[in-house]
Image (cartoon, rainbow, N blue to C red; front, side, top):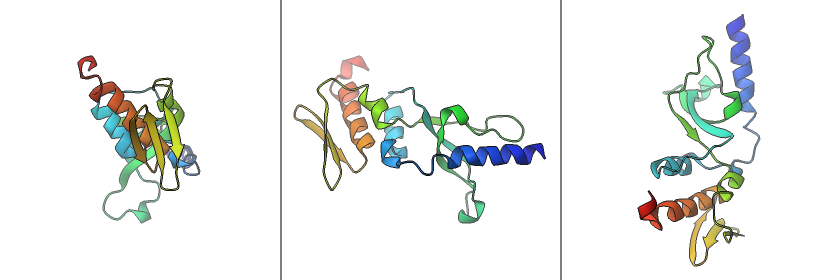
Length: 146
């Protein structure tokens, strides 16, 4: 009975992010790009590789990458956190705080452009556009500071 209660609590914790605007969060690919560039941000939200809640919708792999609040990481019935890899998933605001003061955003029908001076990156997801700019600033523009 205790394991069923824990499973139900875990479902609620993951499902709580299903209704959010995912464009406020970095995509999985952009989050990986930050890690590859050795830029680790403290975030409230993370990507986890965990057992999918709706096993009927997944045929071959019952696991998938899911967005989850860091403070409510699901716990297996054993009481252990079953995640080997947790990837920070920053919000637009969390990335924005890492950027220089004169960074600007322009919203278009096709996406968002993040720019600083004459350097710009465009993406459908505003958080991803900001991440591309942050990676350029921290790594490509300043290779000596890596």
